[in-house]
Image 1 (cartoon, one colour):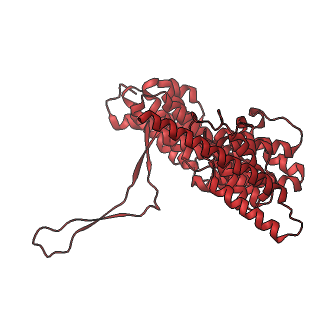
Image 2 (image 1 turned 30 degrees about the horizontal axis):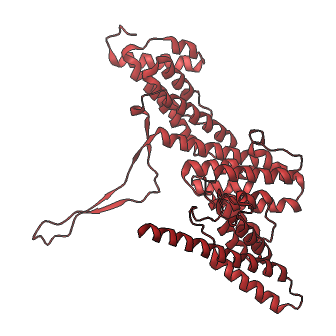
Length: 420
């Protein structure tokens, strides 16, 4: 075939050879030939067959991938492009088989591109047809009365890099996990990461949902809000239902102990909350506590303890604004005692209120308002149910005011003496 001087006849012979060996499934022989200057033609023949065949049951993509890998490192990029093309086509199908195949294709594509020079880890794909055209109005020439020329542009191709392919892989894995959990989710048309994250959270697949949040830079708060509500509902549901979604969160990877589904659910919430909450921050703590307070639930010790060390003032405000006056008064008393050197380690205070220590930021206005509210509640109820809390908090608050005023005066006198 190489010695045939007729180029057209050579092409026909190659097509016939490829067709015959493919029909016989003799792929090893087809792989073993050296195609020399006919490499490009050989690949184009296989691509035509691959694109003309159903994307799910398609041996041509698999063969092209193997062929390019077999050619060596310079052709790994082509191998990755082949698998990406098949994965892209599989997105048009809404079956579990297509989802499983798509994940495998994305994985093969990522593996191939990861072995390439970073400058060449990209592939071109058709642009989304639903994207509207971009209208550009060209400026008129000076002194011209003619109507400005309008140009409509619509992107037809899009360049995808390795980072974007990994994101598509993450979406495919999440869709597959969701589809396996519940057959009603066997669809491949949930293209929005936010939409998929919410479906995962509602299904109880929280680890996957939070992982997608990290990948696509989506806030974690909605996931933890749904998770908190789910944990609160476990007490009224059959344990079998709770275990169904718990096992989807790869519990063997987490330091979780217990045989009760309720205990495991709360431990999972605790583990993921500490994992995804940034150091010294309380964004996710606030979401979880607010949801519990809104539903009238008791705040677990591990959560209130962590919150007190991170931001006790914010926790106090949450208790107060949600009407938990007893808990608010207790927390305020503990916080004041901690400032006065009684239990500071529970609030993250290294040293008590002293002249040489940095100033403390205690929510004085909130505590003052809390005292007024406690007094009002006692006045409206003949039993004065919050009398003990009111007296204890007022006594400690006055002591704090007195101590802080004395220390402030000492600091001022020290500074003034240094000036003069």
